[in-house]
Image 1 (cartoon, rainbow, N blue to C red):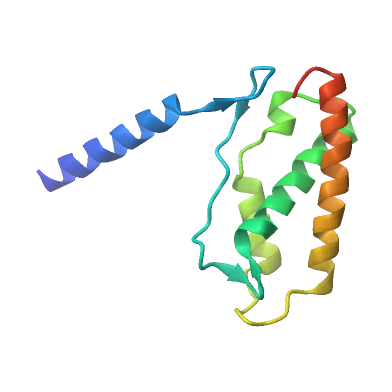
Image 2: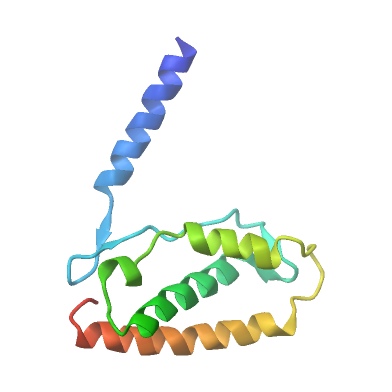
Length: 126
């Protein structure tokens, strides 16, 4: 009985999540922003900030490299960004200084996102 109740709760949560999807102005499905536990940090920086930078860099690079903005390219799932975060920052311990290149990565991420967003607006996918 307990397992049946747990299955019902999971199914209800999944059904609710499917109905709570957000869409962009052009109708693209926008995946919910991944939220890692607030206490999770990579060295001295919040993990959510780093994952966000990775996500933005990956999606911007995909759009700029192809020269074409699509819903799938500009609004991918967060899975790739989380895996890359674990690969790049998973070994750092809390309190350890974040590598200097991490902040540069964030600046690069913002520049790329601005360029990709401009392209997507011009192509009607934002």
